[in-house]
Length: 317
Image (cartoon, rainbow, N blue to C red; front, side, top):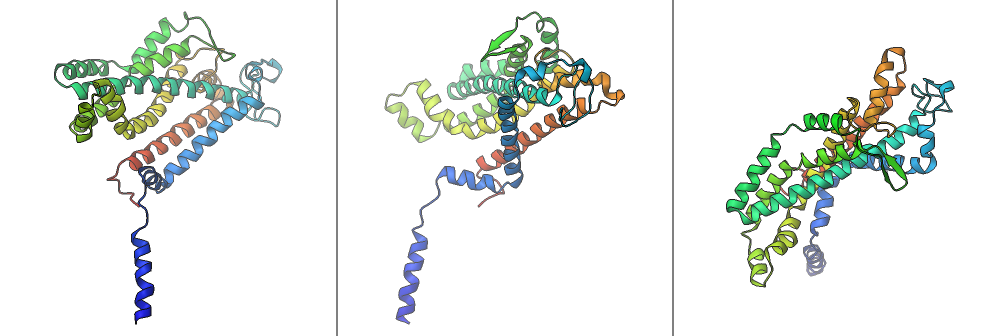
């Protein structure tokens, strides 16, 4: 009897002193419970590898090389995804068009997140008339239709801006217009989320302690309050990336976004619409599949991150 008790107590004690999980470990454990989010994350990583490795293997010259003798060729061993109406290789254009679509999405989200975080953080922390002015300004910007603004500015300014050269690549000036418009018209929802979080966090004891130690307002906002809203910011950034890529595809499909010779998945669909009834299905199927796949992966990833950052999520340990 005594021997059994002696062996049982150490086992119980060993289990009781197991170290607790850190916040990052809890976050990862909740995230990996979301199987579809894991699939979305893996799919997005494979997409990035396709674009990055593909641009190393396939030169940009191949994406813009015209071969009229091979125009409208179906997928073959020479042209894996066929050729377009001027004989350019669709596979190569998918690679470099994906770079532009993702570049537009990422830069637009960086602008959007920066504006939304600053406006929401300042409004929530100071309150009073500062909060009223910033929130009325946010509501005013929210009333501007993003797609309409993209179409108008793309039509009247996109073709007048000179070509931009960046890291050895040339981009049509319309790329900058699309990035700026999407970024400056999609920060308002995030600003409201950040403001709501900061309103509840600014009354916490650690904020009062920081002020008593001499921290100024900007330090309190950006060193203590904003880091504690990273969960909402990361989720909004992920879902905003999908929206930015989709908006770029919209306006480029209408011929008012990214302009040739710069390729994007959206303007590849524009080039394909005249040949849909001629049987050149590969010109629109492959860009469409890549757009759908990218949006799906990002949305699944964002859904998983939202659940992981929410401690009240149903997907617990």
